[in-house]
Image (tube, rainbow, N blue to C red; front, side, top):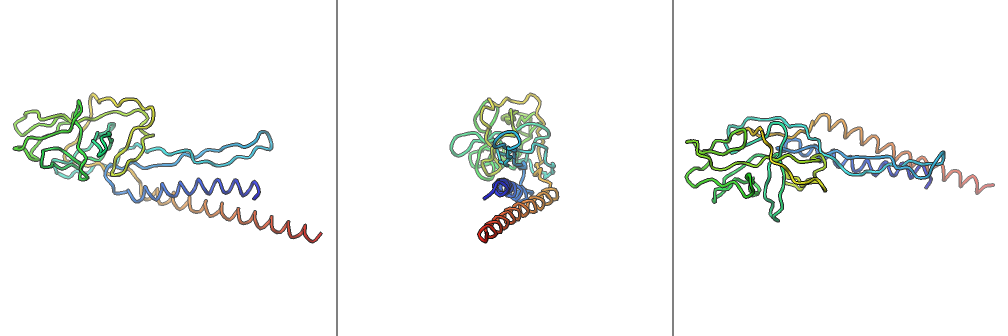
Amino acid sequence: MTNISYVSLSQATALTRSMDTAAHNLANATTSGYKAIHPVTQSVPDGSGQDAINYVRESGTYLELSDGPLTQTGNPMDIAIAGDGWFQFQMPGGETGYSRHGRLVVDVDGQLKTAAGMPLMGVGGGPVVLPDDVGDEVMITTSGTVTNPQGAVLGAISVVAINQAAQMLPMGAGMYQLPPNAGQPQQMESPQVKQGFVEGSNVNAVLEMTRLIDIQRAYENSVKLMGSDDDLTRTAIQKLGRV
């Protein structure tokens, strides 16, 4: 393989990752609270001066943090965040997951959980637990305070700010984990929690589909370039063999 083929191969490899993330985004275009994932590519030089060759390398991903559309459901157990902030959930292994997914249910013990069974965390740690006689008849203020119909405070939902949130890593089920060296998340002083709403995915399906088509075309061009370079090499060898 010549340098042309190696450069084309590096580009095709990076584009494969881009296709995977675009397809994953499209598959989650209707997932509540989902944040689109985009790859980061960079040019990596090999050599120096006029002899330097630049290869393409995929060096990670980042989250698009723009808000998804808020849809009113009327369900008192649905919550969303307008603007910045993340809910905290207790994962099965004991670690903390962060999400904008606010479709909740009340289990037999009165805990607010996701449909997958992950408890919603309250301010100060520990899950948010409702008394047996309350059920889903609760009021949730914009600050995240949970009260019964008479106004008695039952708990407070944790909404935190996260440093380097764009570098968070997906854990599945709409959850994300903190990026390395992000520091401890801080409770937001004035969160904007909206009861009876859910946040949709921030994926623009039309834009993502167009992006996927462009990536596929670029990938095909890279593969064709490798094939053309291989044909030129084969022709040169054949001509040299006749000399």
